[in-house]
Length: 104
Image: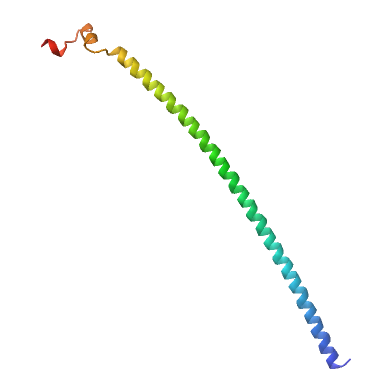
């Protein structure tokens, strides 16, 4: 074997090694790209699910708040009615022995 053949054999092996490393690098890089894409899609799906849960929770809270405010308004109206029945002006005051401002 001559030196020329040895140099060509060495260059051939080096070229083969560089080609193999390039293929491995491309494969690993592609795997990272695919994994990142999957992670991104998973995060988007989780975000949509979280937003849907928040919307549901807010809707339920709004419904409860409306129910409570309606109940409070009903009670306030009932109390106002009772107050009007209890205090019916000067006629009630005379009945309990109080003086009206007109008699002085």
